[in-house]
Amino acid sequence: MLVGASSAQENLIRQTSNTDAAKSFRVVKEIPITSVKNQYRSGTCWDYATLGFFESEILRITGKSYDLCEMFVVNKDYMDCATHYVRMHGYSQISEGGSCDDVLEVIRQHGICPEQAMPAPGSLTGDSLANFNVFFPELERIVSSIVRKGAKAPQQHWQDSVQAVIEKYVGRCPDSFEYEGMTYTPKSFAERLRLNLDDYVSLTSYTHHPFRKWFVIEAPYKWRLKPSYNIPIKELMDVLDKALDTGYTVAWGGDVTGDFTRTGLAMLPDDVSPTQAMRQEQWDDWRFTYDHVMLIYGKALDESGKPYYMVKNSWGKSGKYKGIWYMSRDYIALNTVYLFLNQQALPKHLRKQLESSGF
Image (cartoon, rainbow, N blue to C red):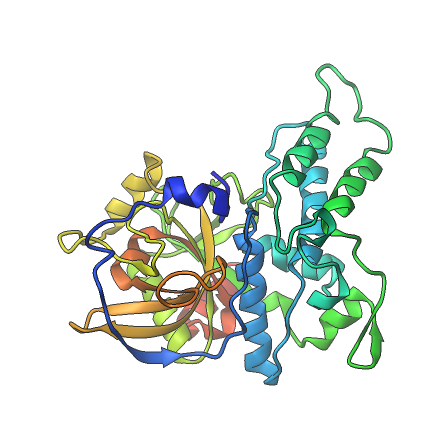
């Protein structure tokens, strides 16, 4: 299963009478965000969601709205992934999926550009949106062929052939470009955005590792092996609430294979009360996976007073709420793999823990 791949959505999202019920919501907290995007036929929810998160961070910091380029990230990240695959002698994964860490590291290492500085996502192959149905199998074939069985070294100049495939489908990243009357490189444009890239942290909650420690979440799409800080689920939910209450959006990585509908709702059955043990059990037996990334930007109550979170998806303006999902607090508590957010939004005691742990 690809993280956020729309081609997998039909088979993986189970609709139930409980989650399809008509509901109304009263907004409690809503943080400004940029427009809803459409990842279309690509497994790039991690890219769209995290850039949406950074766009909301820039909006919070500067008051200015940007449309950052997802295909710039794809270009750089897929080459980084291929490099990792070769350095691991083929003992890693080539996939469309990724995590928030990928976008952070691309911006840190390569910079970023606005959407208009590169071709539209699907335009090089005659589509209007990102369509990786042909692109990624071709990329996967060429990368997997680099590390041949019994070879003592990878093929020479393999980077050129991989980069050529990437640029064939998503375009070449610009060395420089014009924006609002000024010339930028991707790195100088990233500096313009006023993001402190050292401020961002990933938090998780599992019992197969000790709490108050860092560990790398064992998920196929987290190939960069960046660690997350482990805390109890109640505390993780408190972190989420505090961040939203103080005006910070949060990128969410989690599972959408259960009670998550195409209509814009995600809620557990009334008789299910999530616990730390339940989270761990479902993670260990693979009922629960890391398969999607979205942006949490607000809080709401339904007609009975039950708490929900307002979440920006990357499937275009689909569903009852035009690309927005209402996800119940219980659903989030059970299905969260990690939260990615600005450490300035954390409670002081938790920030001190991170500092003492070497973050």
